[in-house]
Length: 52
Length: 413
Image (tube, rainbow over all chains, first blue to last red; front, side, top):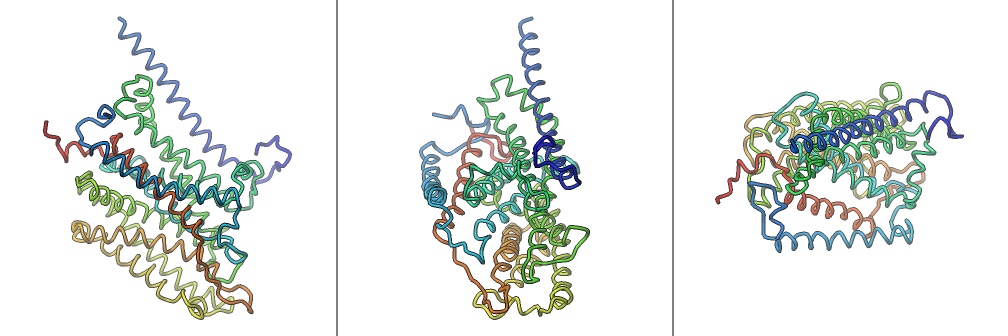
């Protein structure tokens, strides 16, 4: 549920529950994005180095 | 045929033997899948659940595997956050066991909800006053964390590792694993606790009911503590079983002893808290609601004081006493006895907190309601065990699960 959903209420319960969920999902998402982007960069960099 | 996929420096059984093992476990798995399809297509009338047993064998199995899978979060916490470096030799297996346990818990829940296509409702139409909503959030997020922790191991497969992108991805994931492990510990703490919290606040006779701190009953903390104490014991049990089946030593004794020692002290702390909690409940909480302790252990044909003695004494005090002594840990027989008893103890605790609690009569004219699961419930509960066996077999064969294996079992060329 997001704040723009019609069921959303701006109270502590919604903020704590959904805040915790988004926090955990964000860490996983950002962490994996960082690993994938860095892996793509490392792969191209290594390929480039091996051509020299 | 598939020797190119097998990790370097280790020996594996012939393909036919492996295929036979997978086929046997696969047959059990298919039996479970058949029962699962019956439940999905014909509905929950396939079970023996009723008005007294809204929670039944599945919820016990869920709570038990989640507690046993606690080895992953606690070993990860010790390895990445506390910095117990020796545990890097067993963390892969702890993660694999945790992955199996949590995927099994989600699978059982998918059968239990009866209408799995609506599983997403809990995220979109969340009841933010329910501890079970927190459990659903944390459980699914932690399964995501476990998948992330298991992925680098899959990427270390000999063939997959030859692909540069996967090689770098695995390397990068290893680098920031502490972040994922910390997230996992945070999520685990809350969902393990909330499962216990549910028992503490349910409307029923004051059997599972407990007082506590703010909104959290004591059962919240006892569940988290027991999972952190007994989860690693289950990891050690399965490691020892794998060593027995493969006929090889896979992890050095000092690693197992360290994990057993930490578990032993965790278990000692937990069991002292559990005894204190039980005494307070028996002497203060239950009498304050008009009951005697023995009301909950008599007038029925199954639940007697024996279950309390078995859970707290034989499967709690005894393994704790063994695991905190050097002699107990160093003797393989006592070590295995202790870790198996501790694993059984946590399963028994979940049984008591789910099924005995529901068996207690609520209204004055009711009797104890005993319950025998249907074969469909049993088959769907055995299903994750078969799935776990297959995943362990495949992972052990093709992935470097035990980093010390080549050193402990040198292959003669």
